[in-house]
Image 1 (cartoon, helix red, strand yellow):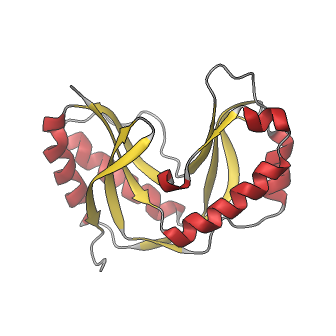
Image 2 (tube, one colour):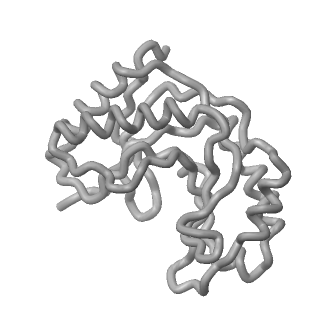
Length: 194
């Protein structure tokens, strides 16, 4: 039996609270039909995915933990700031609504690259997509009509408001996804983190 795993940077409570306030403001901009077609991420599930592993044999967990531990010794803690809304794949055909980074994108990319190399050496298939740091705030519901959010995204981004103050990135967490809940399996501090 496999389990669904991913490695992520957790979001602290203060940042979570800031994000929630901004998300509520964005929801108020949405027309009712669009809001109903979106499934909003529960705030306790907010995170920044570094590496999605997907269905994984439990006996591979030690390899993942070793890769995470090694990656964490290669980078020191750093700061990020959440800011700017976006969507995947496009504003005319929304599947995912996300908040990007307005600060700290480069160290996040370095962290993802280092972890990706470590996991590759451990025999895991590397991600094919280019890493793009983001926090998912909503997904379209299954069988939804096409959701278009071009105007709403533009309105929100025109406010030029950050979605958080600076927040520290000081650890990586291995999560297991079980029926929409994320169970923490392991946590590693970045080198020099207290």
